[in-house]
Every structure is written in structure tokens, then in C-alpha cells.
View 1 (tube, rainbow, N blue to C red):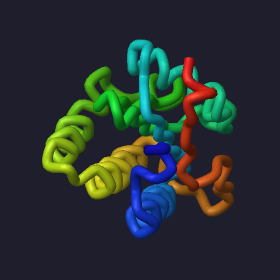
View 2: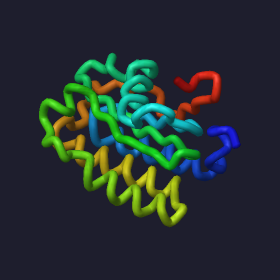
View 3: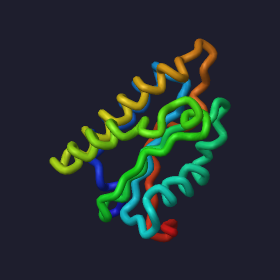
Length: 150
């Protein structure tokens, strides 16, 4: 199954809405990338995609990537330098644990949406929404294909 078919249209809408909801509370930028396989370390692959998706180019360096390799049952949450500079090392652990519990139950879209909204709530503390805030990155889900995998 292609990564773009992993979620139904309704599930994709739920995830995109979670991104929009989360970004209403923070100047942080959230992206989701889904692919089938992750042959490398999941954090290394996530970091590669973080840069490839241009997430390091936000003004406040406050981008967050939710990365899922669905066939390999791997996922990671990566925050940019601006976030990592002001948050504790275990900042993402609670979100990851709750998401993993949802994933184990087969509720991938729901777990991802919950994680995105939770990230937005936590980011609000460090990067509150500003009246002049601009949506710097697309809210849509990006999908990898086999030719793209490294």
C-alpha cells in the first residue's frame, strides 16, 4: 500500500484539522510525513526529512515534524533548534507514549491528531501565537514513496 493510501480521506482531514487547530495557539509550525519504510535510524531519517521539507527555515526555528514509517512501525517527533533550546530533553516523551498506545490499538489517525494537538498546546507556552503570525509551512500531510527512501 502506498503511504498516501494509509489514511482514509476522513482521517487525512482529521490530521490536517489537528495541525490547523494546534497552529492557532502557537507560532510553531507542524508537519506530518508518512512513508512505508525507514531503513535508517528513525531519528536520522526524520532529521533528513526535516531538512528536506524546509522545516529548519522557520523564523523562530520552531518547526515540529511528526514522522511515521508505517510498514516498519516506527515513528518520531522532531523539534527544531528553537524548541530544543527552551524545552527539557524529555519534552516529547509523554506525547510519544500516548501516541504509541493509540497506535498499538490501531488508532493511527486519532493518535497522530492527539499528538499534534498536544504539541501545539505545549508549544504555546514557549511560542505563543502572535497577531502577525504567518503560516510558514503547509499544513498538508507529505508522503514518501519508494524511490525517495534513503
